[in-house]
Length: 216
Ligand code: URA
Image (cartoon, rainbow, N blue to C red; front, top):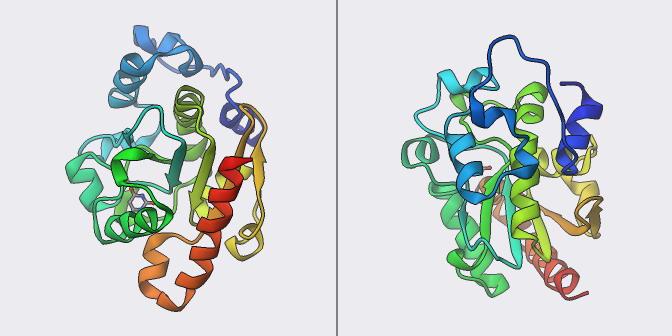
């Protein structure tokens, strides 16, 4: 899948891909038409990229499927791969604290990642992996229909917004996804905040901005 197709996928526009082998029945239906159970099933069975061979299990996403806020991170780490739930390691505890500061319990938001499978040794997602996974996330966004997306970290922000700009340039203003039209606020990844606690103040500012953007 090329970058243009990836962007279309991220915007929720059907992307049809040439196949090298016979597709499973549920793969024939584009992700953009699946309801929650079929989407979850398609993700669990996904073999679109080589990460399926090294995962313990897929990490679909968790939380309130009618949430006002959707939190999007990068990819499952080791703990997430073992437990099948996003943000359950140390970074997850930090994310929970950020959410509490913003007035939410973890269960009130929907949490997902750009990738549904763990990259080996937690390396950065590759463009092709993100492109293959994009239709699943696009459909999750469509189904949740959040009032706000909080993109945590560089990878999530760059993938969602289709840019190479660093987090420092993306945070501090409200972006918009084209389709569906959802405001996006960018903040630091909780793992980065654990390493650089001095940046927590800026992250708090981002959460305040997100609260305002969700009300507009
Ligand atoms: N980091 C992420 O970006 N996502 C997770 O699920 C866990 C750690």
